[in-house]
Picture 1 (cartoon, rainbow, N blue to C red):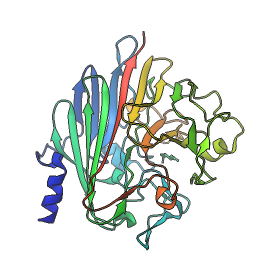
Picture 2: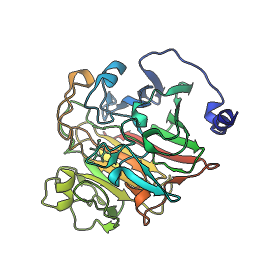
Picture 3: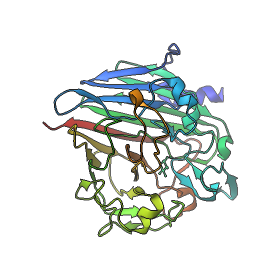
Picture 4: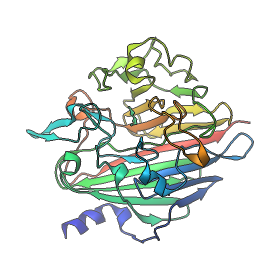
Length: 355
Ligand code: BGC
């Protein structure tokens, strides 16, 4: 009974249908086509018109669902990430006097929800129209070490104004922590077209959370001005990526959380343009952080989109989120979710192309 009541609270569960187990779920709107799979509720491809009006896929992905499952070196391609996006130090946190031990999957820390993270889940495609799909899944109490049974829904929508909107919702039956995001790797010239270093990036903030050598935040919120991490006024990603700077050394490039407080879904957090395609992606979100990761651990190990190798820095991520390690950082915004509350967050990736 309790489960049914919880499901109904997530209103997207109300209309449930069971599509056949086909490989890809396709949405179309305004000349944009998006494809998804249930495994990890992943975005597999996104075709967007370039400056000539020709559709270009701008997301790294495999050509079949089976390839995602078979991939031994999957860096979360296109997946929904949880229960906690990014790192939790020493894979542990304390809540209401109890210390929870999580999976250690990153140098003694916990990354992206651990071994049984949401990227490994078999999600249900619970509701689908031509332009939107809702994926739902349940994470049992204690999974990955996290307290509380969690019910999660993620709705992807292709909007009428050429955007990909992602709405996240979740409820829990015990007090827990939660930080959901999507881990698409973008290349706005198209995967297989080379590195992303000539893309122009603007991140509209003047602060970030510096990290230590294991990419755990130090707890400080620091100014970007004067550092090679400052993208406030827009410049090519590659211009300063190899500067001698401790933060770039730790990340092997950019792998940092940018700070946005206060702001709303109407505020543009970031904008990127592909130098060849002319495609611009703008990022809007109600989340307080944005992880910019420049594909520094991509190493050409996977054969993906039509035979392209996922080479070093050939994709980038802009993950909207709460700050890494927030459960251990009292100075960061809270990621606690309690029974009776509904976790909600929204991100919109908006597309256009200049002639
Ligand atoms: C992290 C990187 C990590 C990558 C793939 C990103 O979100 O910030 O440090 O290598 O995910 O796991």
